[in-house]
Length: 162
Image 1: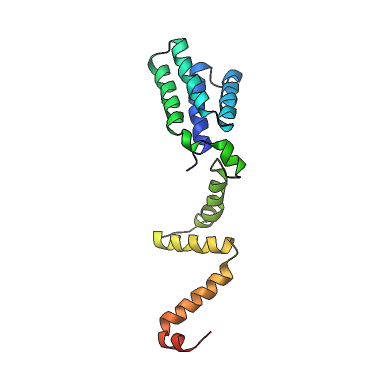
Image 2 (image 1 turned 180 degrees about the vertical axis):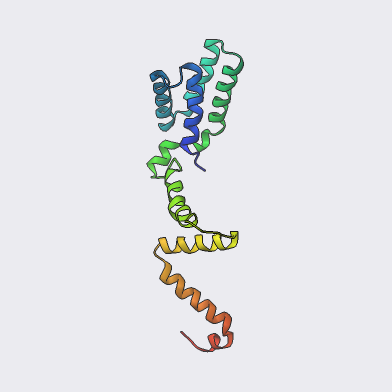
Protein backbone atom coordinates (compact mmCIF):
# COMPACT_ATOMS: atom_id res chain seq x y z
CA UNK A 1 0.00 0.00 0.00
CA UNK A 2 1.26 3.46 -0.93
CA UNK A 3 1.67 6.02 1.84
CA UNK A 4 -0.08 9.24 0.80
CA UNK A 5 2.61 11.86 0.17
CA UNK A 6 0.51 14.45 2.00
CA UNK A 7 1.02 12.53 5.26
CA UNK A 8 4.77 12.54 4.67
CA UNK A 9 4.71 16.29 4.02
CA UNK A 10 2.87 16.88 7.31
CA UNK A 11 5.69 15.12 9.14
CA UNK A 12 8.40 16.96 7.21
CA UNK A 13 6.87 20.32 8.10
CA UNK A 14 6.88 19.37 11.79
CA UNK A 15 10.57 18.57 11.53
CA UNK A 16 11.32 21.73 9.55
CA UNK A 17 9.82 23.89 12.29
CA UNK A 18 12.23 22.40 14.81
CA UNK A 19 15.11 23.78 12.73
CA UNK A 20 13.59 26.91 11.18
CA UNK A 21 10.93 29.52 11.91
CA UNK A 22 7.42 28.76 10.72
CA UNK A 23 6.75 30.45 7.37
CA UNK A 24 10.45 31.07 6.71
CA UNK A 25 12.17 30.49 3.39
CA UNK A 26 14.62 28.17 5.18
CA UNK A 27 11.76 25.94 6.36
CA UNK A 28 10.34 25.87 2.83
CA UNK A 29 13.71 24.94 1.34
CA UNK A 30 14.30 22.28 4.00
CA UNK A 31 10.98 20.59 3.20
CA UNK A 32 11.50 20.88 -0.57
CA UNK A 33 14.95 19.28 -0.31
CA UNK A 34 13.72 16.36 1.84
CA UNK A 35 10.63 15.86 -0.31
CA UNK A 36 12.72 15.63 -3.48
CA UNK A 37 15.06 13.15 -1.83
CA UNK A 38 12.11 11.02 -0.76
CA UNK A 39 10.59 11.22 -4.25
CA UNK A 40 13.88 9.96 -5.68
CA UNK A 41 13.89 6.97 -3.32
CA UNK A 42 16.26 8.29 -0.64
CA UNK A 43 14.03 7.82 2.42
CA UNK A 44 16.89 6.21 4.35
CA UNK A 45 19.12 9.22 3.72
CA UNK A 46 16.45 11.60 4.98
CA UNK A 47 15.96 9.53 8.14
CA UNK A 48 19.72 9.36 8.68
CA UNK A 49 20.03 13.12 8.22
CA UNK A 50 17.31 13.87 10.76
CA UNK A 51 18.86 11.52 13.31
CA UNK A 52 22.33 12.98 12.75
CA UNK A 53 20.96 16.50 13.23
CA UNK A 54 19.53 15.49 16.61
CA UNK A 55 22.95 14.28 17.72
CA UNK A 56 25.05 17.07 16.17
CA UNK A 57 22.86 19.81 17.61
CA UNK A 58 22.53 18.09 20.98
CA UNK A 59 18.78 18.44 20.89
CA UNK A 60 16.67 17.33 23.83
CA UNK A 61 13.15 17.64 25.15
CA UNK A 62 10.24 18.36 22.81
CA UNK A 63 12.48 19.14 19.82
CA UNK A 64 14.22 15.80 20.10
CA UNK A 65 10.87 14.02 20.59
CA UNK A 66 9.40 15.67 17.50
CA UNK A 67 12.37 14.78 15.32
CA UNK A 68 12.54 11.22 16.65
CA UNK A 69 8.82 10.80 15.94
CA UNK A 70 9.27 12.05 12.36
CA UNK A 71 12.37 9.90 11.74
CA UNK A 72 10.67 6.82 13.20
CA UNK A 73 7.53 7.44 11.12
CA UNK A 74 9.55 7.70 7.91
CA UNK A 75 11.63 4.65 8.80
CA UNK A 76 8.59 2.54 9.72
CA UNK A 77 6.82 3.44 6.49
CA UNK A 78 9.80 3.37 4.11
CA UNK A 79 8.48 0.27 2.30
CA UNK A 80 5.33 2.25 1.45
CA UNK A 81 7.30 5.28 0.20
CA UNK A 82 8.86 3.99 -3.02
CA UNK A 83 7.55 7.01 -4.84
CA UNK A 84 10.13 6.85 -7.63
CA UNK A 85 8.84 3.40 -8.57
CA UNK A 86 5.20 4.34 -8.07
CA UNK A 87 5.55 7.37 -10.33
CA UNK A 88 7.42 5.32 -12.94
CA UNK A 89 4.42 2.97 -13.00
CA UNK A 90 2.00 5.88 -13.29
CA UNK A 91 0.46 5.27 -9.87
CA UNK A 92 -0.90 8.15 -7.80
CA UNK A 93 1.11 9.01 -4.69
CA UNK A 94 -1.40 11.37 -3.11
CA UNK A 95 -5.10 11.06 -2.46
CA UNK A 96 -6.17 14.27 -4.18
CA UNK A 97 -7.67 12.53 -7.24
CA UNK A 98 -9.48 10.00 -5.04
CA UNK A 99 -10.84 12.72 -2.77
CA UNK A 100 -11.95 14.67 -5.85
CA UNK A 101 -13.75 11.61 -7.17
CA UNK A 102 -15.47 11.12 -3.81
CA UNK A 103 -16.63 14.72 -3.88
CA UNK A 104 -17.93 14.34 -7.43
CA UNK A 105 -19.43 10.91 -6.89
CA UNK A 106 -20.89 11.25 -3.43
CA UNK A 107 -20.88 14.66 -1.79
CA UNK A 108 -22.38 16.60 -4.70
CA UNK A 109 -25.28 14.16 -4.93
CA UNK A 110 -25.87 13.38 -1.27
CA UNK A 111 -25.74 16.88 0.21
CA UNK A 112 -28.29 18.66 -1.93
CA UNK A 113 -30.82 20.90 -0.25
CA UNK A 114 -33.53 18.99 1.60
CA UNK A 115 -31.91 15.57 1.20
CA UNK A 116 -32.44 13.05 4.00
CA UNK A 117 -30.91 9.58 3.74
CA UNK A 118 -30.93 6.34 5.63
CA UNK A 119 -27.63 4.50 5.42
CA UNK A 120 -29.16 1.76 3.23
CA UNK A 121 -30.71 4.23 0.76
CA UNK A 122 -27.56 6.36 0.65
CA UNK A 123 -25.52 3.26 -0.20
CA UNK A 124 -27.96 2.34 -2.99
CA UNK A 125 -27.82 5.86 -4.48
CA UNK A 126 -24.02 5.93 -4.31
CA UNK A 127 -23.85 2.60 -6.16
CA UNK A 128 -26.28 3.81 -8.82
CA UNK A 129 -24.35 7.06 -9.23
CA UNK A 130 -21.09 5.15 -9.68
CA UNK A 131 -22.72 2.97 -12.35
CA UNK A 132 -24.12 6.06 -14.08
CA UNK A 133 -20.80 7.97 -14.02
CA UNK A 134 -18.93 4.93 -15.35
CA UNK A 135 -21.21 4.81 -18.40
CA UNK A 136 -22.60 1.38 -17.53
CA UNK A 137 -26.12 2.40 -16.53
CA UNK A 138 -27.93 0.96 -19.58
CA UNK A 139 -26.25 -2.43 -19.17
CA UNK A 140 -26.93 -2.39 -15.42
CA UNK A 141 -30.59 -1.48 -15.92
CA UNK A 142 -31.12 -4.35 -18.34
CA UNK A 143 -29.46 -6.69 -15.83
CA UNK A 144 -31.71 -5.30 -13.08
CA UNK A 145 -34.84 -5.91 -15.19
CA UNK A 146 -33.70 -9.45 -16.00
CA UNK A 147 -33.12 -10.18 -12.31
CA UNK A 148 -36.57 -8.85 -11.41
CA UNK A 149 -38.14 -11.00 -14.12
CA UNK A 150 -36.39 -14.11 -12.77
CA UNK A 151 -37.44 -13.28 -9.21
CA UNK A 152 -41.07 -12.49 -10.06
CA UNK A 153 -41.59 -15.19 -12.71
CA UNK A 154 -39.14 -18.02 -11.96
CA UNK A 155 -40.92 -20.63 -14.08
CA UNK A 156 -41.30 -18.38 -17.13
CA UNK A 157 -37.66 -17.27 -17.06
CA UNK A 158 -36.52 -20.89 -16.89
CA UNK A 159 -38.66 -21.86 -19.92
CA UNK A 160 -38.32 -18.82 -22.20
CA UNK A 161 -34.84 -18.51 -23.72
CA UNK A 162 -33.38 -15.10 -24.43
